[in-house]
Length: 249
Ligand code: G
Ligand code: G
Ligand code: NA
Ligand code: MN
Image 1 (cartoon, protein in one colour):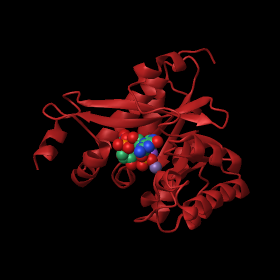
Image 2: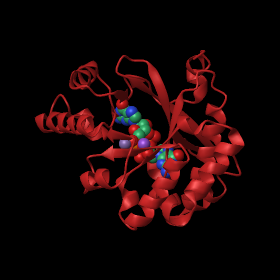
Image 3: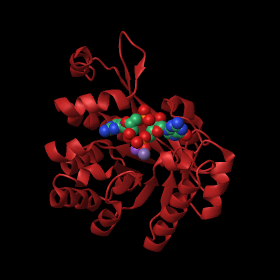
Image 4: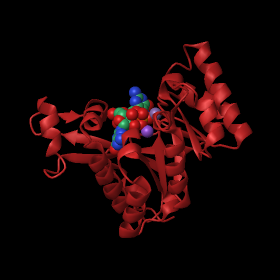
């Protein structure tokens, strides 16, 4: 496909951009930013990662792309006066193809970003093919001082056994549950259960896709630790949030 060919030169032609979406504590204070990749295609508008990440995964370009994301995001965050954290998405394919812990260690050394300020977001897809291998890689990542969050929690197959097999630092409730909180009693029950699970396991829970004050109020009453979504802030280039990240700690 044409898009696939264009993807090969996207890094060297500087067509990728990072967007940053705030993550807030229960009291509304912004505590971190999720890093979200955008492709500014020369002949199209901005292309969503939902479109080009699968292509990059098929062609093996994903490892180079994710490494670029990690390096750019760490370089950016290292300049922030208030030392907020960043959450970076890695593809399950990275875990099968490359040496992710080595890559992270190299970038952290190069950018001098404190490892405690980095959180890796992975979906349970990472554990499906080679369970033991993935667990070993995750342990090496945590040994660097980097945190690991389980993304899109509740949408996969056996999330509960994964929580038993690996000490994740955070659970992200998938936005499909959050978006139906007001209209679907099942969604509210599932969100209630996930937050309760987090409390029992002493795992902080973050809800994504928070768009309304009613959703925020429900999540607050359930004791959800953190919120992410358009209500808190949309993903934008970091310039949009410059006054937040340059504020003294
Ligand atoms: O930002 P948006 O909602 O369009 O993202 C769509 C999907 O792409 C999400 O599942 C998100 O996790 C993923 N994604 C966003 N940025 C990156 C990235 O830098 N690397 C990887 N591997 N996935 C990303
Ligand atoms: O799969 P992952 O959780 O990484 O996907 C995150 C994506 O969800 C981001 O790319 C972002 O564009 C999108 N997103 C974040 N907050 C909201 C929201 O409140 N509403 C909607 N519709 N999408 C959101
Ligand atoms: Na994510
Ligand atoms: Mn998600």
